[in-house]
Image (tube, rainbow, N blue to C red; front, side):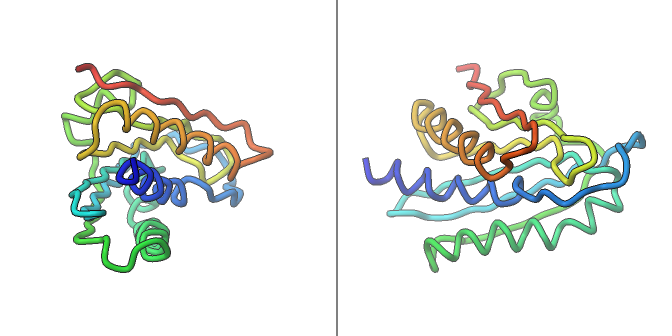
Length: 168
């Protein structure tokens, strides 16, 4: 039970990257840039891996937002657990990794994930967060908690957040 609660708390960290309400001038129509974030952590002797994909307004925005996203993810983790984060990497890609491409059409994949939609004229983008290392039922509960928190942090903005359950 406590392992699941800790996993929920850590997954809530992912929402920090999703909660920025700053205004953007226009909706972007060019080719996207995909930020691929991977964080490995250990909580109560359980290894977890969180993978995030953020569809940015081009490669330039993707590169510019890397430090902001990293600070949000690492800062949130360190607030709850000094020794939890084992590794962190981020990169910008012209296309999402092939095994995650279906997430941007909200198709089921091998693991339950959180799906948010871009909100025009804000910094909120299409984002997907997948967690590995927990059972399917726990992943769904975590996803639901993440969506609830995302909606609360972005009150006043018409946000969309859904849980897409794994195909197995």
